[in-house]
Image (cartoon, rainbow, N blue to C red; front, side):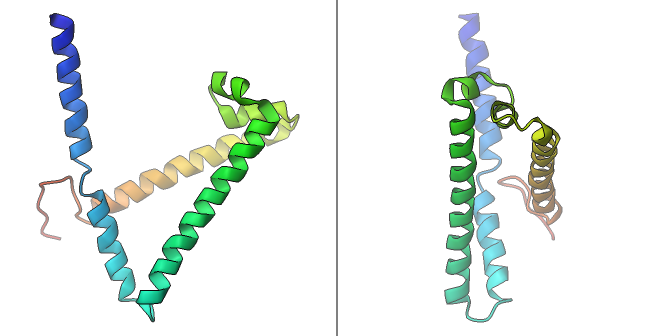
Length: 132
């Protein structure tokens, strides 16, 4: 009985955390609307830019994922705490280890800065109001 209550409270807290970000797509749409005011022919430019960005992201993930799988194999990657570092070691390119680790840190900081930029622009969690 007590264990059920703990799981229930944890589940409720997780749901509340996720609900606080439910307006993220509307923030992205708001940014696209502002971008549309800055470019010539936004009806053509914005869809092309979105599709190009998506294609580049999928391509990078596919190339990195395939290279890692070919170098280390799925079992070794699944067991690794740092899969890309493990793939670099499996490929015998140990000198790239710092590059992979620094790249991961930079990517994490980029995501954090994007989050902070959204918070700093007055776009708060769902249900909040902003005077910005």
